[in-house]
Every structure is written in structure tokens, then in C-alpha cells.
Image 1 (cartoon, helix red, strand yellow):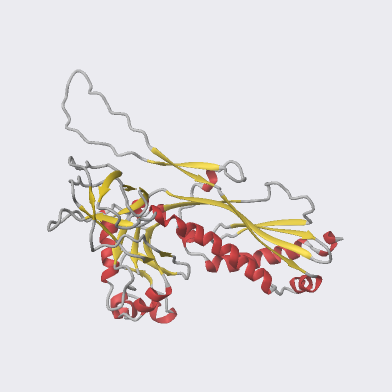
Image 2 (spheres, rainbow, N blue to C red):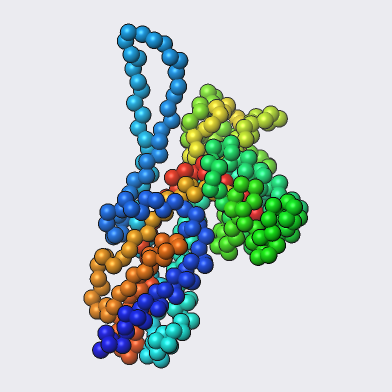
Length: 390
């Protein structure tokens, strides 16, 4: 029987090896705020916990009186974190492969399955970048070729957007890291204040952020609308007030904007607009755009006929705070048990808190092994995520 072949010890061995592989492949999951996991009451798909985001409170002049003044009620907004993603990485193994596990040798198939699941989780977290609107750097140009000015620009944007100071992370791809490691400001102990970077080749904590490299930094391909060039313009004689998130535009068939594109209102021709950048949520009109919805709401009022600039395609190196993303995973041992399953094992990694289930099912002269994970995430503080274009 399969139960006599697949033992708890073997399950434990494979799960433990799986978590070691998973841990070294993840970056954003190590950054995201996971404090909300304990609020999830059911370890099943689409279970949800709402994260409260406090509302702004206005100040006023104190005026003593016999009658206390009315107090304006505020309602915190809620951002749901839903366990929407239930992914598995299955593979089949014959009895020879099973004996290798018994000897403590992790088969290549298992390593590849775990790698695939890890990459899926990481890519899901990166897919939330379309909610971020802070932007620094130059699209299509890898930062840190000569100095750290691109990081300082991103830091300034983060400070202007009221990103908390700590903990911040500078997440970069391999090209950006290669440039950064070549800078004296990264290499020299006199600049760093320590020798860790010289010894292990890692940037570590620098200028208020912990620098991390990952190969999973995605690339955003922008719409066909080109700027500079003939621009789309704001189309409203009265202009738009602070807080507005949808505007009408004119200009003709000038090309598309896609979700996640970065735009900026640069003022009337020959004048200066404001520095805040915005992320496109949706548009109407295809390649002849008639309206744009974006985040955040306007931080400065805009007037009729202001030009609309757009950033080009870019690598999504990111200066990000822990509270930007709320991420949750749930143990799967209490979910629906698949008929025919021989054994299940769940391990919680003490370092990252990742929950990974391994389910084993005996088939025709082979065993099916399946790693799976249940998780979800939301961007709860988009002001705490700044793209540093590459």
C-alpha cells in the first residue's frame, strides 16, 4: 500500500527541503506586512480580513464656549486582503525517485516544483505594482551607472509622499545591483561605516534602506502614447479640483495608456506643472482617449489644456516600505481533503512564516507529489511604494 511506502519522515524531509528552496527565492514576501494573518478566521480560499486605513483628521482653533462645538465624524477606509490565490506545483515520481527521498536526496523534480511555486508567489506580489504611483529615475536606463543620485531621487519622492522612514527596502534587479556594487560609495568602508559589503558582496543597509537583489523584478510595458510629442490635454474649462481621480482629455488619436502607466500633469505649454506622478487605473477611448482614471486623487488643482506627460516602459526597481503590502498565507491542513490522498504534511517556516503543504497520492506504479499554498495580498499604503525606473 502507498501508506507503507510514503512515511511521515519522508514527508517531513521533502517539506523541510522545500521550504529552504522557497525561502531563498523570495524577496517581497520577506518585506510585506504579515501582521494581519492572525485575523483570518478560516483557512479556505476567499477568506478575507479587512485592513483599516485611518482617515485624515483636521485641526481647528480652540474657542472656549459654554456649548462644545460639533465634532466631525471620520470613517477609516478598509482594504480587503483576500486569500484569492490557491496554487499548486504537482509532479509524479516513480519508486526509484521515492527511494532517493528516503536517502535524503531531493529529486530535481521536487526542486523545480518548489521553485515554480516560489516564483508564482513572488510574481503575484509584484503584480500589485500597478497600485504604486511614486516614480523616480529614467525609463529604460539602469540606475547607479555613475552614482547614487537615482536612489536619492527615489528617497526624496518617498519622503514627499510621507512614506515612513523605517523599515524601508531598496529592491533592485541584477543589472542595477551590478552597477551599484561598482560604486565607491558602496564598496569603501569609509563611506559605508562597515566592511560587510566588501566581505560578502551584499550592499546591506545604506542611506536609510536595506538593499535587496532579486531576479524577479518585473518590467512594465507602457501604452503607445508617446511623450514628449503631441500631447493629450486636460479637457475641462473649469479645471479639476484637488482630490479628483477622473478627468476628460482631448487631443485625438494619440495612442493608448495601459493600467500601471505613470502620468504627470506638466502644466500649460511653456509653464511648469506639479511634480506628483500618478498611476493609470483605466481609460476610455482606446487609442483615442477621452477620459483617464488614476490614483491618487489630484494633489494640486489642474486647469484646462494642461499637457499630460507619460513615462516610458521601465524596470520596476522599487523603494518600498514594509506597510505598503499586506500579505497573508494560511495553513492548508484544514482545507478540503482530496479523496485518494495518501499523506499530507504542513510545515511553517520559522524565518518567513511561509505555509506550504505537501500532498502525496499513489497512482499506477508511481506517486504524485503536490506542493500547494493558499495566499493573498493587497496594497494598503500605495504612498509607501516608489518605482525606481530601470
